[in-house]
Structure formats: structure tokens, C-alpha cells
Length: 398
Image (cartoon, rainbow, N blue to C red; front, top):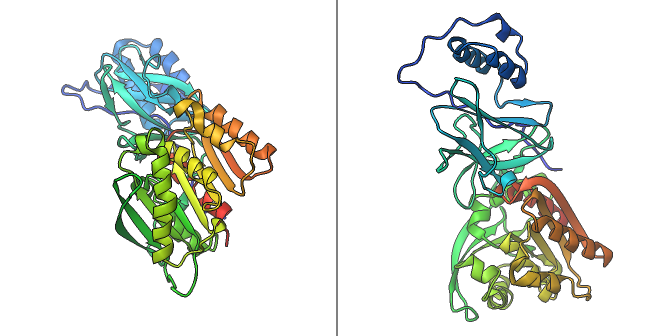
């Protein structure tokens, strides 16, 4: 079964700013001993004169555990410092700070915004100071890597952190080497990282899983750690993994070069791997996995070549380009012998979640073997790294 770390309750938090001329702290008032909610703090500060407000805020901050959450669903994003405006942007805003402004609490330097989320939600966010200064939440120690750098992580009380992404010092690990492959179909050279499981035996044959955005699956999703741990736990078969790095992912995964790239993948890359490693050289022994546009090209590769790939993993498949042409490739009324794992989040914009539901419904109605999840998360490596294990266990169980 999937192993997890302890639950981490992460919400918006507070920067305790240093002041050049910090006021002498007021004597704590008796009321602070009984303040149990942020709304109570607001009410008491509203009724206090300016000389007492700083002390009330500081006493409340000192008395609460961070991150700060109420009723398992109410999140207070908080910032304390000198600012003209503060707002929040993240998965839940479409990464726009518009309309997500904070309110300053009376005469203090405490700014706050209230939001509500599902108890199991996990979301990326940043604070935006004075309209243009995007920063990590200074008080929140939990960050997560993304395609555009680190973000602060908001994890609600029922979210469980993915323990399988953590390297285990005592476990036997696979090895990863790099190769360069020149393609006739695309006239480009691709770097690929080849993972071989610990104890790789040339007398045995192994299933192979191919990843789009290979460097990101390794560095942001910790896929090698996941595979090591799943093999060690006896959750999946020992397998080979191929992490392919694109040259121009948008063009190759979603636009004008997508079919040339697919042909490279099927006729050149697979041939190279089968010729140089001991593989199960049949569709049931191969899987292709990708995220976003990488999910788009993975679906194209598998559904146009079911005689090569019998397993397809779609992380938040962005099928929107070319007027949802990938939908037509997947839903062409000709059933393929493919197992599909499709996982997406509810905070991924207005078109992606409903389209993934539509594709899922078609696959179910047409008797495909499918594993799917819809989670309260955004378009993020936090979602994808935590669900690699679900896909691999579905494709290649021990």
C-alpha cells in the first residue's frame, strides 16, 4: 500500500516583520487569553484604541499554532509588514491576484484574507505585495517546486503528504544514466535518462515506463525515489524507466511537431531501448506517462500506436490545443487494447477538468480498463508527484 508521511496542516501564514523603530509592546490584555478565533481578534481590535492593537495582534500570533486554520475549511492568509496592498494568487485563482486583496486590520500592519477550501485540498500559491512583488509566504516553511520556480504550499487538514517521494537512505537504489538520441523524424537530438532497477539482471526481461518532461519527473516529482520505494515495498515489478527531455515541449507535445515527435517515440526511441536493454517487448510491457501537454502527447502516442504501448498515464491532460483534436484521437469509436490511468485536479481552470471527465466517461462506457482520480488540487507537480505510484501500481503490480 501507499506509504505516507504525517499529515501536515499548511495554510497561509504571517510574516513577523522587523521594525526599524519598534513600539514598546503593550501589556497583554486579559481578553487575549480567551481569543480563540480570528474573527474574535478582529472584533477585539476593532474595539481597542491604537495603542493596544499592536499588543493584541502580537499576543494572538504568539498563542496560535501555525499554520492557522479554523473549522477544517477556513483558511486565513496573513501578512504582517509595511505595504500599500497585499493579495494572493495561486491554483485557486488561476494565478491571478485580481479580486483576492487582503484587508488591513485597523491601525496594525497585519493584513488578512479569508478563503474556504475542501478539507483534503492541496494548492500552490504566492503573496503579491504592492501589486507587483510576488513572494513566497515568509512564514510558511513548506514549498513545492514548479515549472516556474518554487511556490508556497497550502495543504488542508485531511491531505496526506506522499511519503513515497522521499529517498530512503537504507534502501537499495536503481541507477540512472544519460544518453543522447538523434531523431530522423524530428531532426533533433534528445537527452534521455535511463533508470535501471537495483539488481538489474540481463537474463530477465523488464517492463518499461516512458516519461515525458523527463528531467521534471526526476527533479520535481522524484520519480526515481518513487520507483525505488515501490519496488522495495513489493508494490510493483522491477522495471526500467526512460525519462525523455523535450527540446520544445509545446511544439512537440501539442502543436505542429506532435506527430513527428510521436513517430520518433514509437519507431526510434522504443527500438533503441528494446535493442540495448532487456525489455518486455510487447504493448503490455510498455507504459507512457506525461503531464499537461505531456499527457496530451502520451495519449496521442498510445491511442495511435496500441500495438506498441498498452498502458497510458495522463496527468492533467491538456487536450485543448488544435480544437481538442486529441479528444477525437482517443474517442474515435474504435476500442484499443490500452489500460489508462487519468488523474486531474478540480482547480485546473474551466476547461481541463470537464474535458477529463468527458474522456473518462467515454472510456468507461466503452469498457476500457481505467483508473482515475479527481483531486482537490491544481495544475501542479504537487499533484503529479503524489500520484505516480497510483499509475505504476495500476500498470505493473507485483
